[in-house]
Image (tube, rainbow, N blue to C red; front, side, top):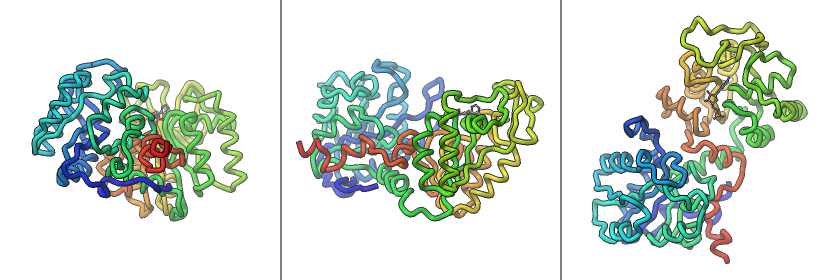
Length: 409
Ligand code: AMP
C-alpha cells in the first residue's frame, strides 16, 4: 500500500499538545461488565505510552458494542477506564456523559500529569456512525492533534474516524503504532510475497468473501476453503451437501470463482471429508460422524472439516512461503467442531511461512491456542483487514493523508 502523505505518531511534535487518540477499546464483556479479553486495550499501549512520554495531554476515545446511538449503561466505558488506570498507573477521567460539553472541556482543561481523559462510548451519540459533522466538529474542538490507532474501524467513515479529521492538517494528524503495523503487514502482503503464497479462507458466508477471494486469486498460488462457505462451493461442483449451510444465490458466484481459478491454473482446495451432525447444537460426541468422502448424507449437516482434509490443509500450510488466513474452518465455538480451526492455527504456528491472520474468529482461535507469538501478524481488524488486503481505500487511513481532498479544498 502506498503510504504517501501519511504521517505516523513518532513524526509529530506532541509536547504540551492536547491529543485526541481514537482507539479501538471494543472489548468483550461478561454479564457483569467484566472485561474477558483486554487484548485490544493492550494493543493501543505503544501509542498511548509514546504520547504520554512525549508530553501530550491525552483524550482517548472509542466505541464499545452496539448501543445504536443511545446511552446504554451496560456499554459504558467504565470497565475500560478501570483497566486503563491499572495498566498505565494513571488516573482516568471518564465524563458521565459526552453530551455535557462544558464538563468534558473542564476535564480536559484541568488535566494534570498522571491523568488522562477517556470519553464515554462514542456510539452513545447517533452522530458517530452517521459521520455527522456537528458531532465531528465538537470532537475536533477538543484537541490540537488527532491520532488514529483504531484499525478495527478504519473501514468506516464514522465521525471520530473520518469526518473530524478534516479539522487537522499536516503535522497535526497521524496514524498510531498499531495502525502502522497493520498497514505494513496487511497493506504489504501482496507486494512480492514469499511463494508459494497460500490463502486459507473460511467462515459463514461466500457473500462476505467474494471480493477478497477474487482479488487473492490473482495473487496466491493455492486457496484452502473451509467453514460453511465450502458447502456452496461443493454444491456448485454437484457434490451432495445434505442439510449443510448453502447460499443458493451464490452458487453461480462459486462456479465462476472455480472457473477463474482453473483458467489461471490456481488450485482451490475444498474439503474432502467432514464432521457431520443432524443438528447444529450437539451435546455429545455420539451425535457426530465423519464422512468417508466429500458427499454429505441427506439430513446431515457438515460442521467442520474432516481428518483427511485437516492433513491436506496442514501439509499445504507447512510447505507455504506466505499464508493469509481469514475465517474458521467449522463451528469452532463448539468443542465438537473446533478441531479443523485449531489444526489450521497450529499448522500456521509451526510453519516457517510469513503468516498473517486477518482478525475476527481466526485471530480469536490463535489467541485461544496461545499461539500469538508464533504468527508473523495477527490483525486487530476483521472487515478492515480484508478491505486493506483487497487494496480498497479505507476512510480512516485515507483521511490521514496530507494530500486528502480535505486538506486541498
Ligand atoms: P464469519 O463471521 O463469516 O467469519 O463466520 C464465522 C462463523 O461461521 C462462526 O460463528 C462459525 O460457527 C460459522 N461456521 C463455520 N463453519 C460452519 C459450518 N460448517 N456451518 C455453519 N456455520 C459455520
